[in-house]
Image 1: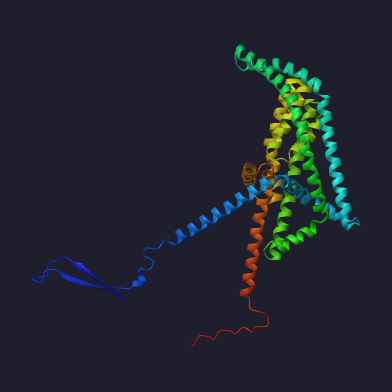
Image 2: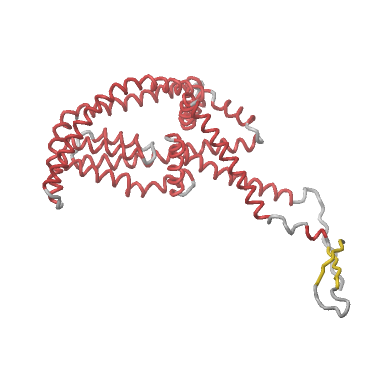
Length: 397
């Protein structure tokens, strides 16, 4: 106890003022000027988030400095995660894992080369007709503008602008050819590193995964759950993307046949491949399909193809995408949209592809660990086997 003296002014007869002695406990003052517990928790969490953000920024900065090898390895890891079950199936049927990895890589190269040749052959066959139909399309578009109320002067200006844009785009393509040839060396180097990384990841994937689980710094069981969920989410994501892309390609193929657009198969292939690039691929495939329709069928066919692309990659795709992505990832389609766009804004094309499966894996890992903690808590509360339980004494009457 601490004795404190308080002076209170007042009349106390002839004695004048009087002093009043008050006793109080010093321990009761220990929390008077302390910050509330909730405020301390908020501050601790804020500094924790700042530290995590700084770590992520530093990691991204280091990865950007080493993108020459990081991007090929990440690309190869994604392909290996999806293709490793096929290598495992070949191994179970008597094919050595190294041979199975080589066979899978040869199949990927053959498939890619065939698709590229198919697309290039289709584009080359329509170049001459595309040039003629573009000139006819200018008059058609000018007529459409007049029909919707645009004055003839504005329509003529739009026509002239279209003509200049066509010539400018031709010059830009010619100028960009030299740049493209220069970039081929970088592309060849990227593909070589990707192929080398992919072979070793397919061949030695199980041993690399086991080594990582032992050295990641967490219990092996937890590391195994994490790796299992990440691989499962990647495979599920690409399964869902394949279903959605095939659905859109079939819709576009049927629509192209109905519209009489040439190279319907090529358009369907491009639509299917572009489906693996979230959101941006649909626009690229749509522009390609509209140009082919314009070259082969004129402005009317191009307008019909534009409407078809909007339906196939918009309203109709939304009918199947929630079921495909929901079943494959286990998260809401709106969450897929948000994390995909955010990942693309932060990390580019890699973020667009990996944001959704990584988020799905994090959600599933958190649920698995929560269930494991619940089971552990239930086992601790349960009495060990062989322990006799004593009934409580009856209450006295």
